[in-house]
Length: 387
Image 1: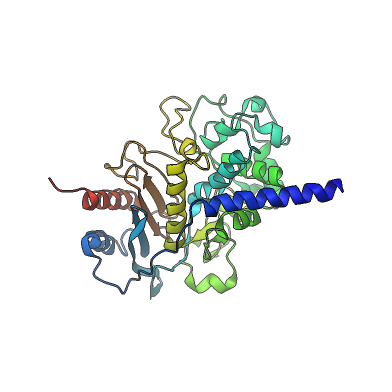
Image 2 (image 1 turned 45 degrees about the horizontal axis):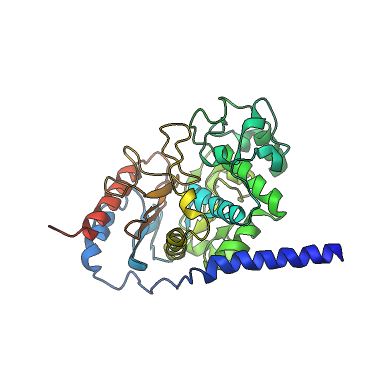
């Protein structure tokens, strides 16, 4: 009876969280805008600019802009890859890279905090005893989310381990390089540790957890980890991997650490489309307006360590930021190594999503840095009334 009661309580709890994530916001489907529906009105300059960057900054791109709870731009330019001239569409699927940290990992943390299952100021060892070593008893969940835990940026998991279990053990026992809370180091290891915390609290695999708690309730039907083969023709290739897998990556996570973890990780591994992310973005902005799920706390700058631009999981604008120069004081967002980004200005009820595969054919191309800033500034100029 006791186990049965616990199962019923857990089922009711999950339904409550899922209901809160959907019923409170009632996310509507993205309007059926397609690349054939031209012209793009006042947003034509954004599309025209992106078109000039095809085969320079990236092979192809999709862009989505939301304003006042509506999707006001959804467009695609370019083609799938340097060697694949099929035109991309707004339904093309991209490797989100580090957007995984916010769309998946941070969102699940928000839900767990809301349920009282995750304490941001608790030591990581409360949830993950395997996280051990000098000073690691001082590392809190908040430090993981602000990249101030003292962990190194990354480890050669792909070259030094052979299994997911071995890779996680290497991460959990890696030494700190600075006292917790004293130094900002953007760290994939922090996200991998936090993913384990989430799995330990819930008792569920990370990919299944996100599918059940976020992607399915929000009808994000083209979003997930380790995409099935049936998605392959819609996925934009990333890089020709010359030192690990020795093949062109299509539907395989680009990030090497996430690859060693089987394509399911807190730091990378998520694939999605601009329309699906637009649905997520509208939901997140609504949650922030009502503060129904502690979103406001997670999207505010934490000043840990002093001067850092990081919020909890999310980032905020800083000098030379991919957010451009015209986002408001409460803006937040994130980028992904493959050429993806998402930025919000909650004061204007605005979001800007840009998905590209700038690492095709090679990661040496870094022109995406200026493209992100230019797109953000163009959108803000268009939405700013002229005097």
